Length: 140
Image (cartoon, rainbow, N blue to C red; front, side, top):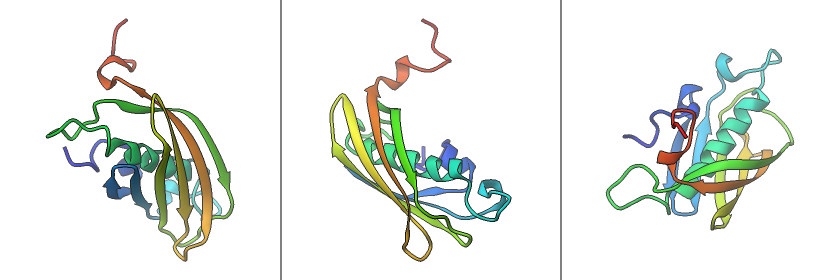
């Protein structure tokens, strides 16, 4: 599976550009699908970009050898987002760095505008869970 398949970010037109252990970078172009009526990015699209890239920063160190899927999934349990500005041109770029790794993993994400201004800052906490044992498709 390509690292850009089957994700909400891809569904709204974004993609992951770089994914390393503890770091990831992704991009989201401006389109009608992610735009507010005022012609800038919808806050939900900005948070989607930031959350997806944060999860990918964690993936790099959690994959089993030879697998494209993480051994553990970084389930987002807390997001703290400051929206500082917006961008009527796009794309937005998000860069995430794992700050603390463990059962609860902390990630810092910076989202920047097309001209390099900081559009959003997000600190997120992710609980590492067995992806095969969670979700609405799993019967208890």
